[in-house]
Image 1 (cartoon, rainbow, N blue to C red):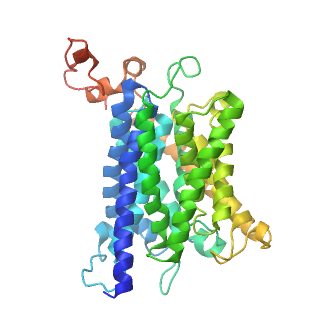
Image 2: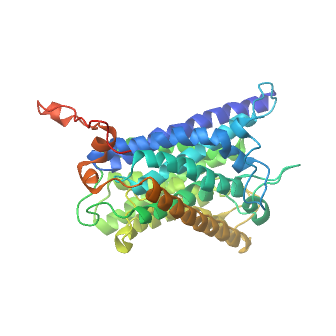
Image 3: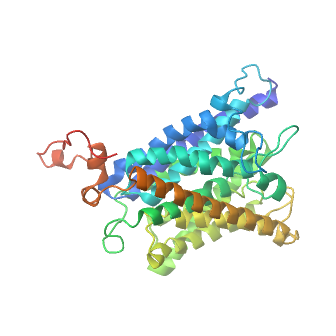
Length: 431
């Protein structure tokens, strides 16, 4: 292996590990945001997604996303790389394909895990695991094929990347809009939590939220800068842009809080940083540092307002997946059409004299992803709910899904009070 390839391989190995770290980071982030009676279930949903999606990705997901196109830029050959067949080459002198494959698989993990936040407190764990597998195959892998699979000699990729020529460096469509639209669909099909809009449902542990946000931010450097697929100047720009957008997103969210509510909160700081990171994901390899700061500001401010829409329209997106990931993904994907710079990428956006052509392409890519993900997810959740049961019973939801599903509690309050034992559910609770 030549020195350049060795360095690129080392960077992608590191980036893959950073993206993997985002899963426990998300578990902490989401776990702190729910009520104490469902924190373990929320964290288990994230770790369950990590396990299921990784296995499904190796079996068939990667083939669908990056196999030779079989249906007009919509779907890769599901048999081409079955069980990563043909990807093992320990003598490779270039960037190992198997490393690229698992790096992309970890993107799928985070995307699916994000959806869990929209349906927290009310979901059967067993059905959730089935959903993770089905959604990876029918929704995530096709969208990844559309935008991430570029055509090359003898290989035909997806329609967004190769016919539409939309720009998405690290997943504004496949990850952010995709998960946000799916979260909205799942929340609508499953319905509101008991007491939504009437009872307080504040985060039970803001320390966990802040720890999770920090781990997510750290892992995001692998997510974004790793998407350069090399230790090079583009990775450096993506790294800097990721840092800047997180910072400006945090500050913009706090500014909205200060004006609207009279105080800035730790929860707002964590949410604002994530909003900025979401928006810069598609654009970190297409804009300058100035553009990254503008995108972070826009995302932080817009998402801070958008999270309140669920109360106005009545959908129960438990942990603001729609307000942060769908809205933030739309902001970042669409603003490429305004802020893309030929100093970084191949085109100029509207504000850099490039006209409205790229903006139109970004709007088409964002809209197509939103409609496809929403429609498919609604159908999947409805079918699973009718066949397996997706939502827990009302009395189980009231008592807490941690006790009912996992026979555990996050905090041993009985022991602290000097009595009480671990509750026992003979035969186990519902999955």
